[in-house]
Length: 111
Image (cartoon, rainbow, N blue to C red; front, side, top):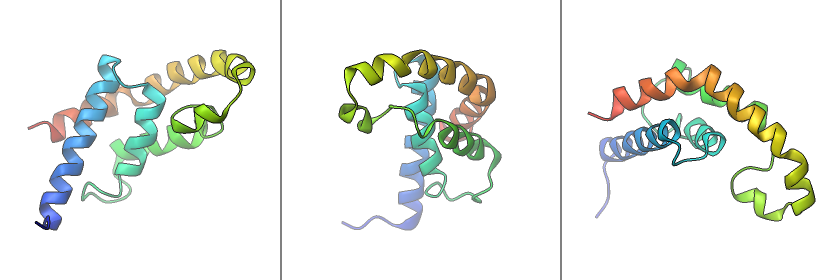
């Protein structure tokens, strides 16, 4: 059964709310969630310059060199250990610049 465009958008909005909620609760790694929300901005039926999603595009851009998400498996333990303080600092910064946008996405799409 094919999904309509509207059904697809609704599914992606639900996923965005799930990711943002998980980021707030701590069940989803904050930087991994930011990267996913950045990619979802093209899938939720909003203008590409939506302020909530742009915040995560900025975060994703600033942390793209860090070992987070699936690519982490290809890094040596030594490199992971060396980057861990920077990852923790990036999480702190990312929350400062985007936590309100997380809450906004949950409020917008969790209806």
